[in-house]
Image (tube, rainbow, N blue to C red; front, top):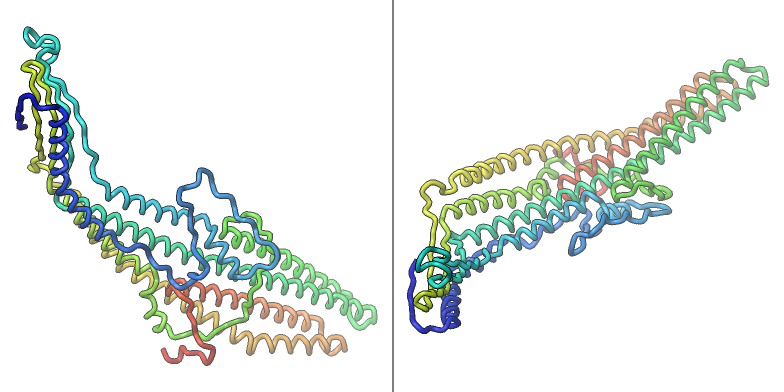
Length: 475
């Protein structure tokens, strides 16, 4: 500490000089502002094209004081686009991720703030003995101290926080695509469940027709009453299946409504065309589009953020300087003095070695995480692609061969049974085969669209294939 004692200097002048000294002391930190502002990273992460036109969740400027009310449940027919828009606007999990992005923006704001100056008032030589009794010999000092960050700490802190914000934005985009895909798959499940319920109702109708036909033949004496009993048993089984199909539909509707935070679905029916099936492109074409998925794109920001954390921890090894200036009143000689203070910690024992090592190892961990993500995404694409190709082939085979054959056999046997040319068991078997083929085709269509949504989720955009011959032969 250095003390200069000018006599008869006004306290206001002394304080003005102290303020100027402090301002000059803070100037070195101003250089870090420009450096920090240039390292804040991207302003945001552009959304993938999948569902981009529907608009993501946009939270309020400040967190609401109470939970947001559930959206009004849609009524009437529900289209896929409307379901997707509802989910992206009101999905609770997506809203939580959006607030994470807002929280990371607040961390960027906090990272750019300088340390506050510190005011100190000290009184010395009070209440002693003899000449120091009372306050006649008191020395009163009013000081302002400012911590000056050295080593580029503020710039490094700003860059690390900005890149952390970018990582949060990528995680939001990952969740947005998850919600989009889960909603599309839930919608497909509802449409499939509706069609399966319709098929189950048709099976009940066919069973009732068989019961009536069997009763007519028994009345005419051309059939045994046992056939009526068998027909009624088959009808009861069909009614049980219809009841189960109705329950599956209700579960699927509830799962779809949950995507937008609903608990009591009120929409009349989900309107979608499961029969729209496109050729499957070659797997290699889809692999080349994997780089667009945010599951991989996010790792560039993740690695940059980990590297920025290493830089930040290394900057903390450079000690900061505390500069201060103040005014001192010496009551004994009735003098005033200026006080200047400059202090710096001596980094003999703690040079932030552990935190630096931890940051470097976390950077290495992120590198391995990126490689693991590449393997995982590629494996997921192959799995989804195989499911898509298998479902596509099943739909084609069922539509071109199985269903026409089953329908033709049932029509022939039904007509022949009325004429007495075939047994009831033959008609019953044909009926079951036809219904099973129809249900199998609906399930194959649901599997196709579910796998298609999974593939589009991985590449981050619509598959967009042209109608025409199957292109997999080019693989």
